[in-house]
Length: 589
Image (cartoon, rainbow, N blue to C red; front, side, top):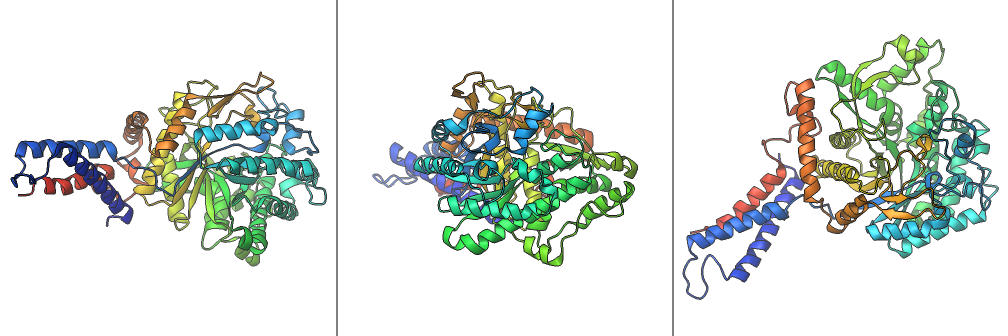
């Protein structure tokens, strides 16, 4: 059965063809029946008209963005603001971490970063130049509450974020505010940080301050960014603040607290603020897409386990109809905990009341996607027990394009598959892509970043139009080059180059900024990059299919099983049917 969205594509395309047909006939004075003589238009002239209409249809029609799709850019407080100890700001765990450990590869800090604390108006000017609908920024908890607790408020912090929000709104840019982007106040970490259950109460208090101070203007809130990466700071030695070595135990204690913290903030807003402020809240969760190495049932099961260990850990308690952790996740963690000699599982239990309170605490699903991994086996229990939370054997294809980051391999189709998975698991929840970006060395002519953005937006549109995924927002990471955590300034994601050796931190638009601006302006993807994306996608699809699948098309049909009824794209079919409709008018006897 053809989807309603697909029918609208045909109707839309038919409208485009008919509009162009009308324009051509008026300009050329050609109608199937000549109004002056009453004679039919000659076959040659009708054939010329038909070819013109068909050519125009195939050129003009190409999945335009849905009118409801919002496009923006992002950053985070620690990565861009600087002013780490200015104007009453307290110390965060990342301030402590970069000053006291050798984990940052270039020995740098975020003490000044891009100096957005002083240069925020330049950032807003860049956003205005791009033409974005929104800007995703985060608030530094320790800049607003220096001790982390609500009894000590920093007026200068409130004033700063008021200024940023007002500057955005004065330029018709919607603020999308992340409440927590990894920079926990150090005094709260001294109490145990996210492994301490009481941290959920402190987060609720912090949320109340933000809703009260900014909620009259901020209508989009993200409670916690990438909680999976937050909990890595409580695993064995990893390059994530606070760098606590509590392998396994700290990992899942922190996860449990983060989920409760999110739910408390949501329920607080729902009860005290939503009626007046009418805002929306959600989480931003990160995940690779995990592709089975082969078609075997074992590899398919392992790929599902992989996504449950990363995305499902946080998504299922909040977004599923039943709530709580999945049985698959609990079984894996219980077995590994026992193999490590623990009498209790690392994965805590929610009470029935907590399950009910946490379930449904969302207005949207925030998704951060960068790359894909191949999954082919769970580690044996004895190996999993010695690992740092990596319970699955993951790899990448040698033919996937690389970047300067070992994490980011360029696999655009993984985004589409991940969106389809979320749709199927969580009742087609509204999805806000809150991060997607490409790291390089900072060159101004960053063609590969443009290719990355276009190819991933193309897969997003396929997910929307062909798979029926409910995606309403796309965010490029990031607006400007910034301090990339443990990678310091060795990896650059920005649409705008920042000269970190210049005290003035000069911003310069890269070529990707111009491409992204054109995409936003035209609300279409540029054909030149789409041709590259098509060739690239076909190449990696065939390479993967040849090595791993029984059918060359199997790789592209996982996300849209049962929909590829014809060996050509829906776009082509839409153009063909629309052209046929108009040609029946042109050639009618």
